[in-house]
Length: 177
Image (tube, rainbow, N blue to C red):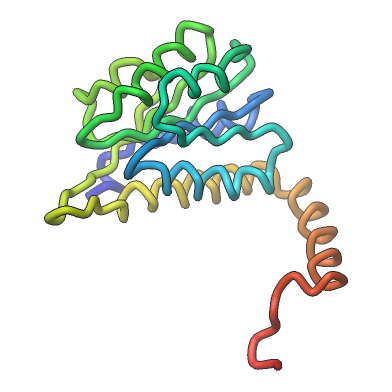
């Protein structure tokens, strides 16, 4: 269902904006914070200047956004119950000229109203727990598309990382003790 609601042109515009940004800001609080952290974790492998903001405090969020401008991109996550903090942050970023990409559940959501590009993903409340399966699928697709655009740079970076991980025993080998 989510795959059918994501417009390919909007998706490609989002990938292009993120790939060409001077700085990338990722906003997500409360139940959307894990999406923001996951996205930011992998973006940090691809880019040097990624800022993940998951604080629920509006004042603290604005302190981290000061200096944002037209060369920057923002990816903001908000699902019902929509976070006032994220919507205010996205609105501020938009007013500063940054490209704002929203991942939300509806074109009518408060976040969608302040974004340049809106990627829609269904988010169901299953009793007390928000289902992030559909939004996470879009995050994964974005990461794969961005990585494909930066294939050469990432090939070299991951080659270096693999050497460092091996040398310093960062990861355990499967089946070995």
